Image (cartoon, rainbow, N blue to C red; front, side, top):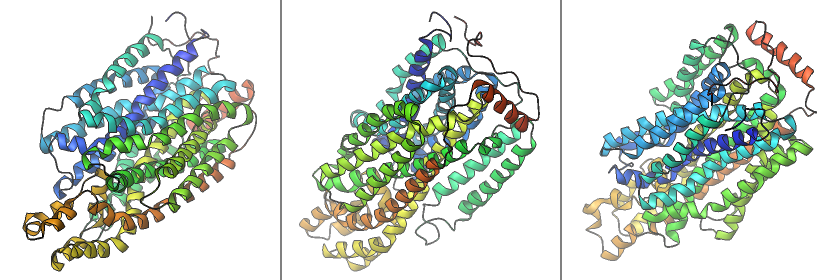
Length: 591
């Protein structure tokens, strides 16, 4: 590239590359979600076997958990050693691990562990991209264009989680390895482009790594999120595992270690997690709204996949093997709505202010959840499409203004840490949604599913004792079966019972429609609980957005004063003078 960061086109080059990086990283948080049936079939693992449930859980949450834990640390390292340097290394690592994932040479449990391990390492690369992309953009764009630029980047990031559902459905239909192959050419192009074109334009902080803070944050958050996720597994005769000593140890121990982390961060001279940023009202309220929106959005993805793959598509004649493909296709309106509103809301929020757009977006999402609450399990598709389009529209209206509020409120030298903290809340919200929404759904199913299963099976001639035994199984197994698009009836009954039944009854029990019909009413009971919580989260998030202080951007001199005061408070040291925008940039990668 000719010219440096002062070149008029450089900011658009930075935006284009970081948007590609964010898109790649977030697509991979959901592409595996919808491809799990094909992946498990490809490595010959039955994910519904009790011994294999851990593989299923870690395939679901491993990538999201790692990104939630590491983005703050990697954002802080970007502040210290150069945001572009960390970002570029992330692009390279992400690409290499994608190649290794697609070459999984093992089968069975070994193949699952190969994928889980390399997905964790891939998530480290994704975290490097997520943690620094917003900070790189904030460094090079002036305040009057920042909302538009961040809007494009953040919309691409969140849209990636929706696009991943469609892309995963299409690619898994062809070959499960293609879910990972697709990253390789894009990753190679993006890596080469990043190393050749991007330059550091931000302020570096001379600081030491906060090792104790990093360690306690990683251990505490990992234990807490893992405990929440494992809490949905049955334990000791209970439908869920909240009384499991290991789950309790994760929740209580993780919470205690995070409390210790907060104490450490108030005592060290150079914290990885600058808690003083939460004294900035816009930063605090914006992140609270982002966390709530992320939990609601993550829960929506899981519920829609279960609804389509486990119930609606089989009822409408689709084979279970093809439900991931068609679930992705039928969710296209969600992606279209998000892409339609996202860039526009960023541009409009630059002109008219971000608060109303952020709050309005969450209220539109709440309205769409209410609409989904009112339609039956076997819905009219065009009504469903309109509601998920509306949900995507609300998410698009919220994303860019919320990010602009958060990132524009912090001092320049702490943008890497702030970007990482913002991404932590979003990624932690996605992991939390697994535990929160699955637990609520299981609670809803527990009331009506046993009676429905018992009655449905005995009506087809299944002996009462066998029907009662199946009906008393933990609902989470049924939920996972629906999530993966499986019909578990044949496996639950087994040939010993099926061979004793009339052929017509056996055919009905193992056919495509019996299981979806059977669980549709209990599923809707659980859906009522889940969507009411999503509505509450969206409304509270909207209130938090409205409470964000309004006002014009501060003058440069005011920004320097505020930055110096905050850095003095955080680090107890004389801050470095911020680098003027026209100054010679820090060049990590000379041409």
